[in-house]
Image 1 (tube, rainbow, N blue to C red):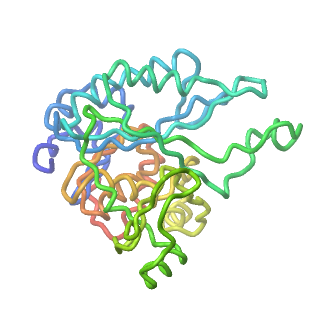
Image 2: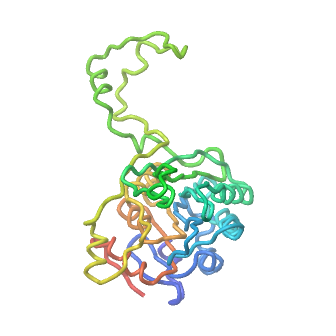
Image 3: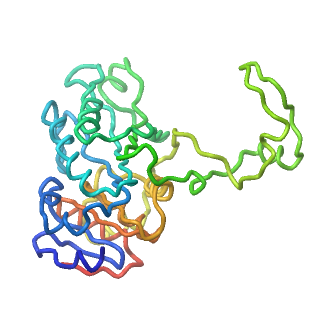
Length: 311
């Protein structure tokens, strides 16, 4: 990617590192530019992104609502198809939406997802959930004030691809064994046989040490860092941090799971560039797009140890 993407116009080039590029502009405009799309056609291994949610209040980073949101998200289907390798993946984080002024959940995010899937002809590989145990109680009116709903503490991560068998290996994201599993491996003995569920467990089914456990599709991860290098950089340079940052560990999970070193990761809604910085740390190539100049400037704080080439 490096050589082919050095001819960007100064209008959209923001900065680069040894492995990636950050571009300035709206994703729908940047990814409609043949100068940018053609060099990476069929070369993207993972599109990992968190687009603006269909929130009822307008945010600085931009967000649509209603039918406009469904049409907007689905409009990326063609270009995603064009950019992805045959075995590449798309992972999109979508939060829950609520009906304006009502304590009722909206199906808008699901409609947008289904529209994207249908228009792109993508296969839905798996639904995952990011549970944030430290998330603030929202929606505030229904949870804190009227006390008639429970706090919304998770978002969906939808994994899709052009194929039923994209590049993936859960051995790259194994988690530490539980204390009981470690004890079982040490004893090399357990109560085999038929369980109440009618499943029959063999005498050696759980005695092999695979160096870790296979993670579930529910990822529990707090997002409470207040002293990161990124935030320190923002304070030092009097910059406004992006208000909707995801933890780097979440990006790391999917980048490890669905790619290998030197593969190309794209984030069309870059925000604070968590995706690009995480890809860089994992020796993956990356390309991100972000329309807000202040968020781009702040995102440079994620590359404290990398040599940046600015516009």
